[in-house]
Image: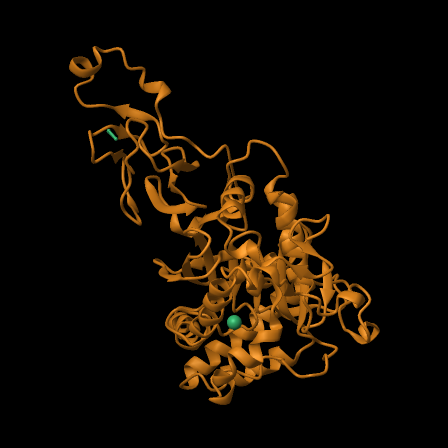
Length: 442
Ligand code: FES
Ligand code: FE
């Protein structure tokens, strides 16, 4: 392709999904430098709490040390490379390598080695052989991110205006933050990670087709996929640095639908609790966004570049799904998924909200994730072929109108940050791939 590597004029070189050399470079220049989501603070409440995860293909331990500092540590023994923590999560006073028994403190310092005198003649300097820490760790709204790069934009500058949507619609609907429900689902997709990331970044277009069965069965409302753009949305919003957030709706229609749903949740007591919750949440959002003329009520999906995704922030009575994409080679991705609820959610509603997402939302046990995965796998598989790789992909939807979409004067989006576009558009995907290409190089 031309001067801009891999994407030009809305055409995408599909070797980006399968070429091993591109994959190697994106592990180095995208996952090796970007701010990557590693945990939420509700997973690490007490000193000694830890979880294990991945940053790209590197395993890491995320721990809260004795001084309440969050540490992100490369999960590999400094002796001969074994993984030192083999569990998903827990609470501990240290990590002992199962090979020769080097023992590390929760802050990563090497605390002891077996036979220090006999084997190392008392000459091993423990202070030089701690677990390797990620040099930068930062949090936003309880989300913990880490980066392997010593320099570059800080987390808040990297999130940019995407943080405004996260804060107001996803992370802090009640002013007290959210809790991740303990434990995650994990599943593997034989698909390149970017196909999933770009889908969440702004692909409203697939919803009515890929997920049609859910709408036909009445499991979900229409999804806002009407042919003509409604002035109140949904909208897809693109940001610098590769992020995209979509399904943004303004006006009160979703609020009214939430009230209708609250009226049907169960017995009189539960209806009262749910109705109050919907109203309290809305009042809080109105206060927090008082300076926005066309305040959004929710958004339904998003990608914080490169691999942190969410879905389900569009209405009050559904939990939010958060996802991390762990690439396992160019052709395979492990998806981890959590549910999260408002910290102030009445206990009586907790299971209802989680179940609503688990059974028919974007979940391994629902229909949406499975519908999507089939497409993601086929797109990846076809991108391997010699002939197919010569044929670029079409991401030109609304390209000529980007930023000046027909009819946008009618849209009720005054005050919304980011590049706000219609529900049928590929500006968020173009934004993501352009940014990705600027990092990965040739
Ligand atoms: Fe860990 Fe030897 S590899 S103690
Ligand atoms: Fe989908």
